[in-house]
Image (cartoon, rainbow, N blue to C red; front, side, top):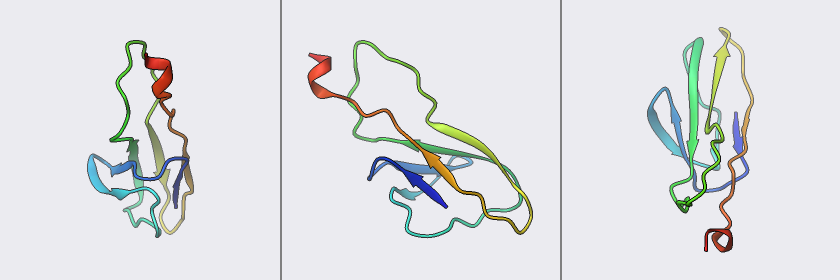
Length: 81
């Protein structure tokens, strides 16, 4: 199960786009390591950038469910002026 603090962000699993947040259902993956990445397509480029990880590496054991929560940094349009 994947949750994110931002609706409309693109969700990738192992490099493949699987949809946008909110993700309405459980995502089925094979057991093992996976990279989950969430990217805000509407992010405003800024002159000053702080690197915040937009991904999480997870291990999914056979027959288990993993819950993932990713919080994206929200751009403040007024701060880039």
